[in-house]
Image (cartoon, rainbow, N blue to C red; front, side, top):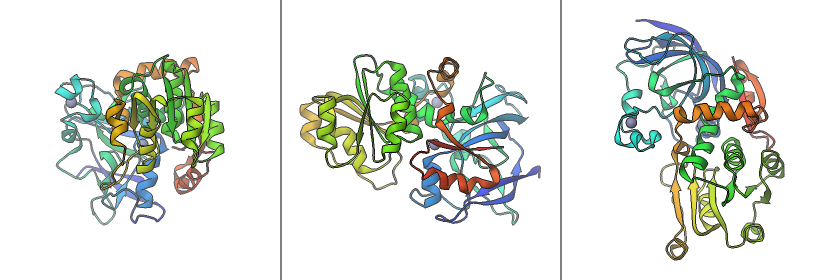
Length: 364
Ligand SMILES: [Zn+2]
Ligand SMILES: [Zn+2]
């Protein structure tokens, strides 16, 4: 067996800190590459698995918002070479199925074939298989993914900033630019001002929305939202609808939910103007249901849609991200609110609970 030792942060029990252990990583198989991790963001989805709010088979290595460098290439890998800098997506795509061809790369019909493999990627010291979130497992010094999950990053931008492109920025941008097609005529509301929410606010600003209304429980998050381009702010509470109507009479044209709860998803719908579109981004556990008014839906031609990972098109969007980052219109630097050494990853998760945090990033 060609396995290499790697240090990884393992979730062995939900609700407990991750344990940094030596695991054994398989060499890349056909179509796969091994990536040396440079920086990995701590995403709220990761936190929800750590807390047990979302289900996952344990033990597991989480981590999916990541940038790194290809250090080994498997057989039949055609798109990448050793030394390539890449951003990883949790939704590998073939580029040729009907859904990929219609611009829905995150729903690729062949995604599973890029995640499945004959041997486990990771074993622990007792030779037990270790599960990987999204077949990535980036809370580790190195990991193996299919080349279809890696997008080349033709930029020397800071690694801690670049990793954000793979999850929160791809999601916020995808939802705004591709899904809701926000433009200059639109009023926009964003519910939840964490990493995805801030990326959504920036995308709405870049897309030229005439009003961008940030909604959150915390004043600190609303301060930040304004600094990233929100034109108005609303503190969540019983008066949220009344506050919103004062800013956008009749409701907003496009709303985005970046929290992950049935009540905020319903709120995204309830603040829509006639013909408005609500996009629900926050992941929720199986079994949750969203209650919306049938008359609001039918008589106002309103729409509510999910957008897994913002229905992003990472490979297509990457040059745009790089240009906007270089122009200063996509402000990644300010989204990285704390940086942690790998050994201190649990402190990074603690830091995420601070309402002034946008993204805690682990650097290698
Ligand atoms: Zn994420
Ligand atoms: Zn496809």
